[in-house]
Image (cartoon, rainbow, N blue to C red):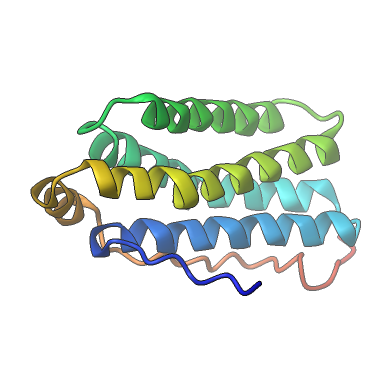
Length: 160
């Protein structure tokens, strides 16, 4: 069975592009784990990506996208944001079980992105009026994500 790409409302396309980069982030960490890359290198990338992208993305969703409809699917997304933020903090504050914590973080991010794309966004597109969707689209920044992190640990491990 061939899966068709999800047709996204034009006002949500920037957020969906962000989600693509979040899935790529997960892939990069998975590659680093597979190649047994030093955890310090991957953790530095996690901090970079989260600061430059992920936490800003969460804030944009929480301040712009979620307020018009405060129902159960929106609350689930907000709760997942909190759990992911907590996992990022846990990763930064400890030195044991880092590989396991990295794996847990990327699993959480991956599952969250898929929840928003497959369940939450279609729900919001159905429930919100065209005017609400348009207002949301006007408020979402159209600034493209640039991931120019210098250490491409996911392509080949480098001994430091």
